[in-house]
Image (cartoon, rainbow, N blue to C red):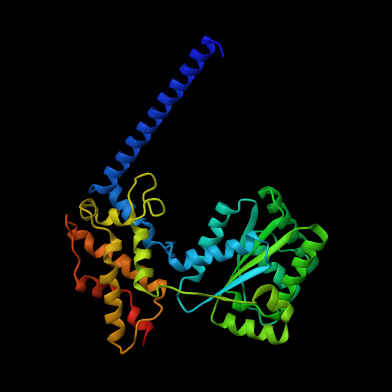
Length: 354
């Protein structure tokens, strides 16, 4: 490289560096401006408070159970296993978990196309009805015969795979207990045709309530082909079972990477509600023991031991706590047992135990 080329190269590098610094400075200024407006009393804060994600349903915040289920599901898809399944008790957050797993699968497996569907119960399901339900989930027309519908679904899956740059499709199925032998047989036949005729692989990730275990047991004794393909070993999916689970969940509210609002403000969910406390070192994760003790007291009040706490009640409890403490946000903030007892009571957790 000549001296002139070296000078040109160095000049270009310096220009790029200056541009990058300027962009970073501009981005930082925008973030600081948004942050200031969000934390200051006024219309901006009111707007963001009204639209805060913790007031939306469902609240999508990572838990240990979701993290574990994602690892199992992504591993099954990565190795092109035909399927995996999960069962959960009432209000454990299975639908929210499935949505989160489906959305983030492309982060680790970008060449796998996917779609989430909700299984629907029919008194007398036909093949045409079954494919119609799937086409609706895909946002496609449902006119035509059963064969027309099946062909349209197959075309949509192949197109999605081509767009993703692969030959693998994952069907995420919510409320999997609503399907019976006929529906899973239709899906088996469709999957076989996709593999044999078109050379595409269809995997399933199924979430359902505790009735899914009964269905798996029935398949095991009467329909081993369906059991082995779809429900061979349903994994247990839980809400919050320990203080460690609860602390991990609460720590997500402190996590700017996954729980930032408004976008670009560098405000975590917990700092949004208690900025003065947050600035002095308080974190919501530090409340795990107080929150856990409140759930224990609530269960004990009706002579019950604390077991698996459904995510509906945990999420509502945290939302009530953060909202209730906003008015008394101070540096060196310290909650009281009464604060958490009131939040748990408001969530109606106790009603789930009676």
